[in-house]
Every structure is written in structure tokens, then in C-alpha cells.
Figure: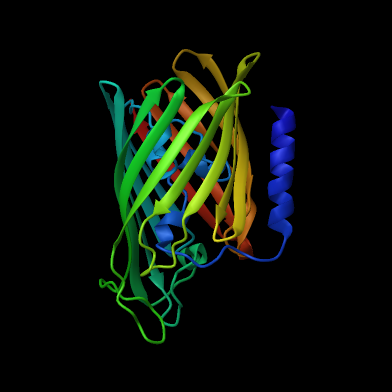
Length: 304
């Protein structure tokens, strides 16, 4: 696992050092982390199994263990919130999720918006949202999943983009298809996202290949998550590790660190975070770094 981490993290940091950024695409919320755990691991969530998989890979859905919600604050301008849940009925696991980002956009900002806009104060109220559901099924060792979602960007309470000749932005209905399988003592995953009509939005279909593994090392539970994605000929990705230490049943702490190829030049490649598990309460935290010493703080609360 150490070798896999070194290779993946090294590749991510090497690619990140190259000048250039992801092609313009929207809605904005589809480019943002949905959970603190994923954010701390370089936003590598396509091979993770939890309820937030509805945003990354529907094949990895797992039943919820309680009530959970996540929030993020991007410097003094943007705020995001997400909630997700999943339940198993018979042989299928059903999940749903909603993520919303609120911020102010500069009057002259061009659409589509970049994650940087969450860090800059503007004059026009803006909102980006995605809501969807999906299901997963296990067949002969292969987990397969499908999802459908509605995504939209809004400015000043209307679906109007901020450009020289503002077009009308309508919500777009998209689909995701994913698969995962055991591989090399871990889990490999492949997911195709944002399938649908892209004529109204600059929203390329995204293909992600991921791998994750958990391993016991003495008193620690170690985990690795890594992924590579392709979107409109742009190659991105991220990777991260986590170490879980528990001293009594139900009580533990988790430390996380990750690296990613940023979507924009203003984002920094390093991410970090952790968790505190106290009986039925779980608190997650992640930190994203941006230019000029600005930050994004991610927090999640779960009651089991």
C-alpha cells in the first residue's frame, strides 16, 4: 500500500505542478467535494463505500447508519451543504443526496463558474445545486450502480448566466453508471458520470478509475484511496491516506492527508483532515487550501 500511495501521490503532484487547469464546465456544485472525508483525501471518493457515494459512484452505496449532514465554508464568500442517505431493501441498496452551494458572483464573472468564485466576494447572489438518487446491486462479486440527478446554476434568483449576452440556463438531467470489484486486496471502481444532453451547459462526461484499500497495521487501521479522471481531454485525480486509532470500543480518532490535481490555478494540491468518533457521535473535518492564504473548511456531523 505504501508503494501504491507513493506512486499515485507522486503522479498527482507532478501533474499538479504543470500550468493549466480543467476545462470550463458547470454546474459548479459538480466540481466540489460532497463530504469532508473525500475532501481530505484529495476528493478521491469513487471507490469509497458510504452514503455519499451517490455523488461519486452509485455502485458504492452502503446503508446509512444514522443521520448525517456536511457543511463547508469557503473563506468569507461561499457556503455549501450536503445531505445523503441510503437503505437496503431486498437485494438493492437505494440512495439519495442533495448538495447546494451559495455564494456571490462578481457582476462581470463569466459563466461557467469556477471553484475560485466561492472565495471571491461579488454583488450577485448565486446558487448551484444537485439532487439525485440511485441504486446498487451485487452480482457475482461485481457491484453495479446507476444514478440520476438534476443539476443547475442560478444567479440572482433566476437561471441567468453572467456573460455579455446572458443566455437562459435551464436545469439539466444527467445520469451516472458505475461498477466496482475486488482487486489486489482492495476495491477497483470505474464510473461514467454526467451522461445526458450537454447542449445547454459546458458539462463534459467524466470517466473515473479508482482504487481503495483498508489494512490493519498493529493498533492502526490504515486506508488508501486514489483515482484518475478524464473530462474533456483533461486528466485530473487525487489520492489520500488515513490512519484510524481506537483506544476503547466506540471511541477513535482518524488522521487524513491527500493530494490532488486542482481544478484551477488558485487551488492548492494538498488537502488534510480528520475525524473524532465518540460513541454514537462522529465529527469529520477537512481543510482545502487556496491561494493568498485562504481556506475552505469542511465539517460533517453524524449521529448513529
